Amino acid sequence: MMSAETSGGAVLSRELRDADGTVRCDAVELLRGSLRRRGIPMVEHDRIDTRTGSLTVYSSPVKGVDDVALFAGASAEVREQVRQSVMEWTSVSRARTVLLASPRAFCAGVERAIEIVERALEHRDNPVYVRKQIVHNTYVVDDLARRGATFVEELDEVPDGATVVFSAHGVSPAVRREAARRKLDVIDGTCPLVAKVHSEAKRFAARGDTIVLIGHHGHEEVEGTMGEAPESTVLVETPEDVHALEPADASRVSYLTQTTLAVDETRDVVAALRDKFPQLREPPTDDICYATTNRQDALRAVIEESDLVLVVGSANSSNSVRLVEMSLRMGTPAHLIDSAMDIEPHWLAGATTIGLTAGASAPPVLVRQVVSALGGLGPVTVEERTVTRETIHFGLPAAASRRRSP
Ligand code: SF4
Image (cartoon, rainbow, N blue to C red; front, side, top):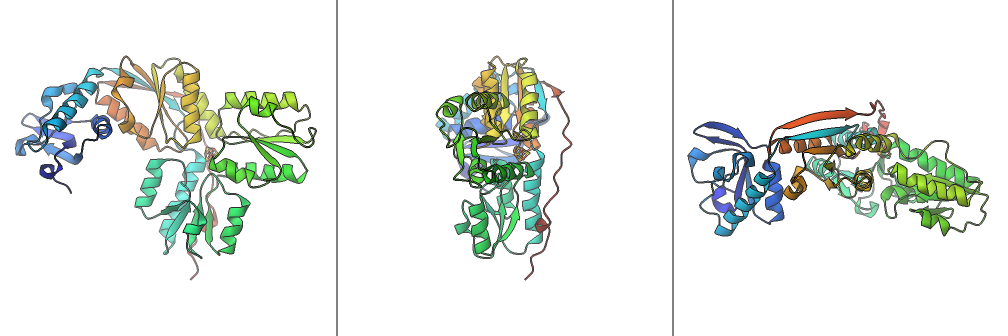
């Protein structure tokens, strides 16, 4: 480990021990984020004892700048940057209420996909490759990579005959054919609710329909679904896209949606489709999945009371981004954060009530970390607002736990 003496930067710790006892530094993640944005090198220790020497020490900003002691080896510039960062957090220290939207965080499809990789790592002696991010979350992917999974973008990065897991977002038939040709040991992490949309695409194409897929260009789920019937499928994102459609037979048009769209925005696109194609054939049930709908309903229930909304999720997580957009449409400032480290001090100025949620691919532990970090800025009252309880669970494919035959 790099020592404090060689870092020339800040030393961060969750616990600070001095002559008066031990202080917990719950806001350390917030400060770490600030220092990272400023490009300050950091070393982290579980605990710092200020009696043992001259260290760059950060303690809770609530206690004030005077509690920051600077390591003698740190440059004057680093010391000034640390001081400014601590001042910024100190200036937004206050008591707050956190409204926890529920349901939030992991959905059943994400839990299943992660467990598939975990089982594969446990049961396979050979390397386990995962095509694309298993779910769209940086923390989850980094954690599984640390535990041995190898993430690749395409199958040509996977050796012939090796084990490969398909992500929760699904793959096109062309990818499945390529995997079969290469005799790969495939474990399919596709969420059953995405697989349902694939089945509908096949069925609609077989009866000769033009399929209008409502979704976002370039998203992996969209690429997989379009791959089921590429000749028959057109992608639309907005009502304007619908107006421009010119199918071969306007009486044979059906539609499908990506599972993670905003319910209210999709309603407008479907209305435009119904308007333009009176004989539109609709999917038997809504393709926007229960988890996406529930997380939007839960956040909607706290937005108006909140001064600020924080959505834990990664930038490529469609359902997380939709939550931020929904809050902004309803007039409440909102930010997408991968973790507490991404929170910026000026967001919290004047914000006494914070709505907090997490997209379906974000782990609950990151939500707890945000609450804990905010607690480092002053007392936090947490109110959980539950709009519905989720009981859905998907079983694992047998291949996930099967040992490979030699
Ligand atoms: S968000 Fe919905 S479709 Fe996507 S993995 Fe979760 S349950 Fe499945």
